[in-house]
Image (cartoon, rainbow, N blue to C red; front, side, top):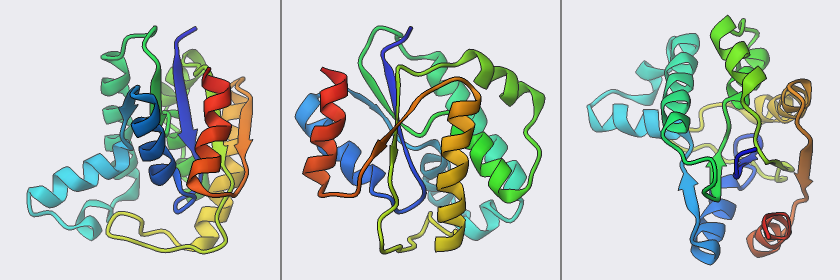
Length: 176
């Protein structure tokens, strides 16, 4: 078993803030969210988020390929926190009503993470340049995330709504 831990949840659940706090307090390897990385790279090349995401299926495939390539470079024994795992792609596709390609399904069957932390959604939902989905989508995605990780044989550890510090402390108990 690797020492990789996924921190996931619907958009706007506080993942980035919690991960940043953990990075400062743990000093472990942090893998940023692949979707946001793809969007940032496109924007740096002059491509708008809207243009990039006009074909949502192709966008999700680009994100999945980035996740696969990144995970291939990781040391299994290094304490690593991933902002979303590959299984998130399946949850996104399911929520969008799109089919999961066989290669992603096969990858997810093989890839297990030591822990999967699912942050409970926050009451308020705010969009930004990369987060284009609405609050209804976020609620549906939260449910899909739980189902998808469980379908592939992983337990989900629900992280309750609280301050960033308390959420990070909750997660750290599982990492120590």
